[in-house]
Length: 296
Ligand SMILES: C[S@@+](CC[C@H](N)C(=O)[O-])C[C@H]1O[C@@H](n2cnc3c(N)ncnc32)[C@H](O)[C@@H]1O
Image (tube, rainbow, N blue to C red; front, side):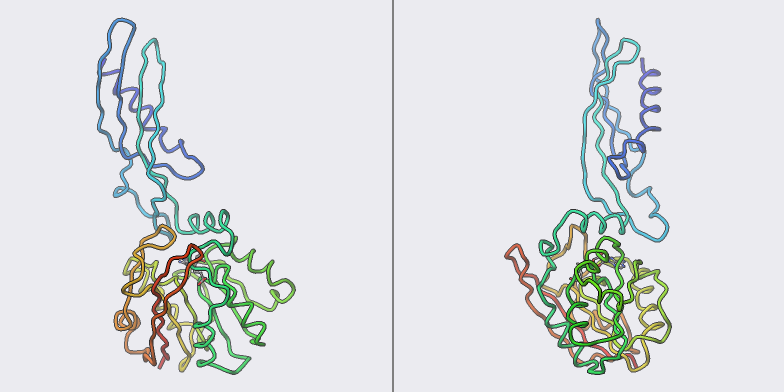
């Protein structure tokens, strides 16, 4: 009997990864609740963990996001035995899959970070450069209207980078013909290939705070140092000390001005910083921090 349980368990364990629900499903626990034949019933509990999260290696170039913990029960009849299994596990996605799903399922003005115009960002970009030929990049621009406003103001060298192709497609469609004037990059900022020593303004609203691992932040800062011109400006906006601990269901790192500036180091001169209360479409407020730096 026990041998049979082990055998059945092994078969199940080897197939768990194929129970995918469209994403990768990692089994945390598997319980065999009941194993019975016509004349006997016995309860057995297997406390198994064929794919615990901590045993999972992050996929190349990404990190694992647990998007849902779920369980399901199934009944199998094998060789006259009835077996009830409860499988608990989680759906994991990499960063890109997460954002493609967000933008594939939510309207542009239904995400918590939506604002009709990014006024504070625009004001800081004006402070950084009134030269309409200045090369500006919006990191994790998503579906934000910043690019529309910059085009409207006559900026001619605008780049938008986002990990989500869906977000880029939506922004491009909204802008129409003018979208061809913009350089679009669909990439993870920690791995993107950007022109060297090129940008005069680097803008990031609500992307850096998702980098919860030190190694990711180091790569991000390397990107800034490589692609922003000396004397160029870096506008960074994250959740502030009183901001939420999560955004889009993901953990974030909250910063005050000193800590955020500290991530970038002495090469970056902190010119000023401010916090603002963002009104989400859901009627809540979120504290954002803005740091305005110059790369020396
Ligand atoms: C909270 S949204 C902010 C969007 C936009 N900046 C705004 O303020 O409306 C975060 C954006 O960063 C993008 N993103 C998340 N991680 C990224 C990464 N590692 N590299 C590039 N983009 C990323 C997401 O696709 C999403 O569009």
